[in-house]
Image (cartoon, rainbow, N blue to C red; front, side, top):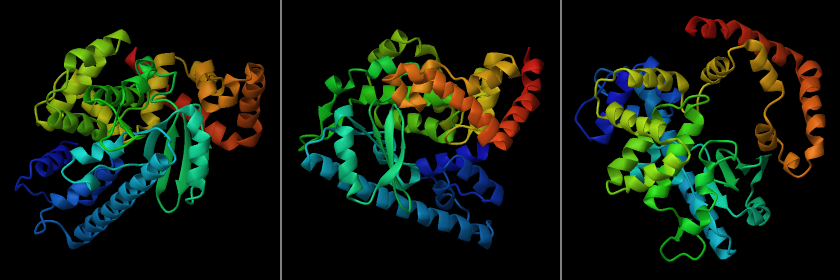
Length: 361
């Protein structure tokens, strides 16, 4: 990971440092969704023609995807503005503009917060623009348009079962309109940074989070030096997340300032390296086994998740509580009769990895 960080830093600083890029570097960069940095930092004399061709192709694809996504975001926001739908662009669409080039910031989908009452209306408008239904959860409605446009219409900034969601329950009262707009909103610098930290924490504690999430933190602070940290830490303290979020901030600064990592930050670096951009199923399993201290308990929780997690997966349960026993029964029958091979593999993987917990006792 050290080489990848140096590559990123050289691009951020617009330095003359260039690197020999290998196939292994490409593999690692793709795992963390930072591959466009490779072409900009490539030593063309030392890197093989085959690798140069590969990273240039990836670079061009990222530029194309970035251009299409940003153009589509403008169209969607214009549609919402014209139809008087209050909205708040989120995550990558905002963060892109803090990178030296917007295409350097990978964006999996276009995230937009709406009032719950406007979701249905917004979906109908996007249906007319070629979007099709992808999925629906308690937190957001996902729509898709080929080849690579995905939109998530959020009802809340964070799913209610995650720590810190309470901070943004009244978020609409704290937003401000974008210049010359009547329905398109933006967050304050402090609230956007808070959201970044809480979203990072949501992924990191369960399945891990890769280089890009910490790069976001680093670049946002570089571009917003006047953030009111008293407010940020005060809000985090209310939900007992001040200490861990301080660690995220310090770690991001140490990482991209190329400082030597020691102690807890060295442990964080290992988790980040193994997590990939959206977290890793292996990291998630390791976390679950450590939390449960028992493979049987881990299996039980996968079949019978908590009430909050069930509502997140099956929004109908929030309105029709009597369906809980039926849904739990369905999950068990599905595991046994509908997906027995997949279920067996998951159970075997849990027992196979359970020795890690024993070794950490």
